Image 1: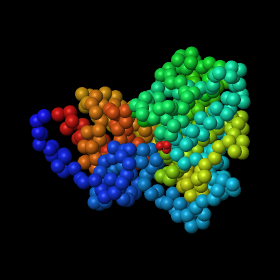
Image 2: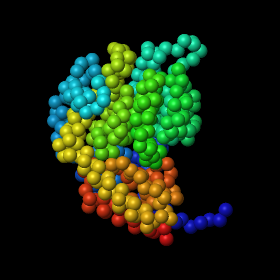
Image 3: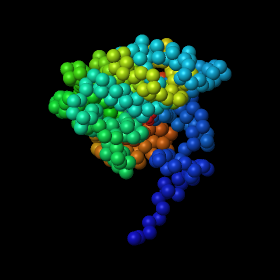
Image 4: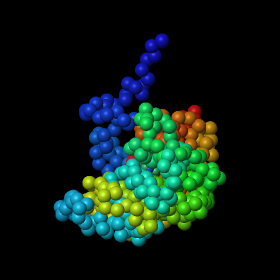
Length: 412
Ligand SMILES: *Cc1c(COP(=O)(O)O)cnc(C)c1O
């Protein structure tokens, strides 16, 4: 094979930071060490600043270090960090009340991540089905219908629910009891529901699959089917929840309330917390001993989540998210029409936006990083933008200008 000289990119690529070698190689990381952040910007160890449109993958809902969240965490850290769920703690009680007040749900189970919230949802759905949809053939078990292309997390149960064989490969045997059907197709769900079906689990928008938005009426259609057949409807709102799409929960765009909902990512405004919410009639299938989490609903993370919810409401971030999302989408539509030989579609709801390219997304993402803009790539060819809900028009203009420059170079 001919020796090719190293490309300029390879020779100037920064060395990996000390310690990188001690981390398991589970991520394709950019070689930045981020050390501080404020609002929509982060700084690396060299002092270089970046406009952050990754936002910790939809976690940093209020940007970096929102003063109200920082203050709440500081105050709570000085008062009580952790107590066991053998007792109550005030931030957990208050957060549960707030989530119940703002959603379809009557009760909440707290955990620490999205995958854990999905695990809790799977367990609750199975327990409920055993009590409410008994199977009279001892050879058979309940199953949960999930969607092709979905993402529900990396633990074995959540991974088995996930509809992406490439993520499952090498980790078999998977958990039995899941069947995948195409996304955004009500007819296949209608045909797939049987007496064995316990629940249908679905993302209101498939985030990891490239920001795939189903047709209007899909969620209400699922609600109708599940009610008709007495099957549970589970919405995985780990990515779409907490205002990301312009409503507190994405299901509220269609008024199609689920029986169970999972939350994580943006919930703690940057701290790790997950939650599984349900109506009382379903939640009652869990009794003392059914499920648990040592850290779940710890006072520190709950105080951060409470502060985040307070800011979402006090700063009017839901209408703002809607407005800024439309502004960003509008600017990207214009950009797409001018760069139509590289970008085929732009789609989004609120501040969850995808730009589908005709080529691989990673080189574009790297070129944006070099220009001071952090964005993310999903499904190989989709640039995903998840700026914080406090993003300004000026920051959106700046990000779109960088994207335009990068795409015009790639286009040339
Ligand atoms: C990110 C994500 C998860 C997994 O969350 P983790 O906190 O990484 O375990 C589950 N479901 C959806 C829809 C997600 O976007």
